[in-house]
Length: 61
Image: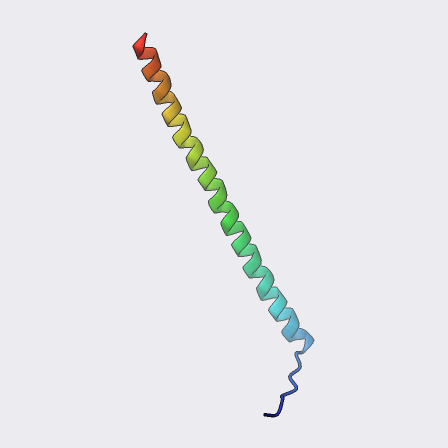
C-alpha cells in the first residue's frame, strides 16, 4: 500500500492549535466552575448543619 505524503500548511496548523486551545480553556474553566460550586454547596450544607446543631444544643440547656 503506497504511503501518501500529506503536508499541513501553516494556516492548517494554526487552525488546529486555535481549536485545541479553545477546547482546553473551555474544559479547564468548566471544571474549575464545577469545583468552585461544589465547594460552595458543601460550605452551605455544613453551615446549615452547624446552625441546626448549635440550636439543638442551646435548646437542651
